[in-house]
Length: 433
Image (cartoon, rainbow, N blue to C red; front, side):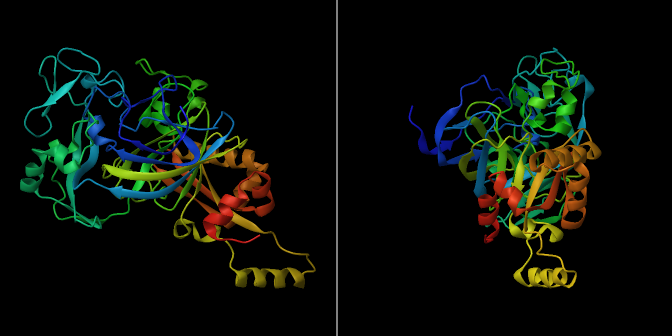
């Protein structure tokens, strides 16, 4: 099949990223992928038939992408389509999972693993096993809320009990759940613990990346959630070595929004670009463990970057999302620096520009170590040099607790050119040679 300029995606995985499964496409190098995404965390968490905690789009094959390359993803737009959603802290039921409710949900009565379900009524017991009829959702809210959005998707307001129960009875409609998604709508829980709470929308994509080199439950395609697979009692158990086949597509970094550029590793032929888990808003760290999962339409443009061997993603955020110390120097700042250099008989100053390296690990310390090591390897720097540059020309920010970080720093332009990244950085921040 010849490559297409634009691919429309409304098909989803069974929450499993499997490089052995056929991909959609191919899409041309420079082509576009438009995805009608299904909501992430909570709906799939209430659907034990799904084997990975989310329900992401089927991966798309990008023409010309081979292992050892990278795929550049320009996020052109993220449009929330849900009218109402729900979220909150989770509490799990040990007897409703084989070690991990995201991956191996089971019925506590008949013992079926990943059973199909149906909905009866509303509330915590509404999700029931299709085999025996017992309540079998692996999770419930410890503190939850239902949030409705205004028609322009600018503001969300948490509903009271009566309103939450009204939308709970027609959850797929209010969530605008895509037709091909099988998840149970989280609205069925009718969370109402924070009535009247108001939040601003700033949508971003929680799951965006490329397909791992081996089958992964989608929400576990990161160093922190991936650590739950180590020695797990279910079929997707991994070792420290096999866990390295992840691509860190599940980041939950709120800077991965319209206008940002993400650069992802290619570990399988075609790369396999997938999308999911759009959030309406989220503060740094996603401290509650979950936020407002929504259905959305996401438009991307993809390019192949040959020969850029990276283990995990790089990020070029919108300029307003770049940390203060990492922002490119202005012409006036450069003039001051050059004058100071001349005072000390020093010839010139370093020309640099910002980039962010994503690090993941079982906890934040390990995620930082991972990100620093990735930056050092990519830019041929020692880790102590990276640490110094991050400290005075960048920042480390929490993407998600327990273990996803964004490590921002300004890198010498000469090094960006050597790695084939300069044009991307230059165009993103409107810089000049």
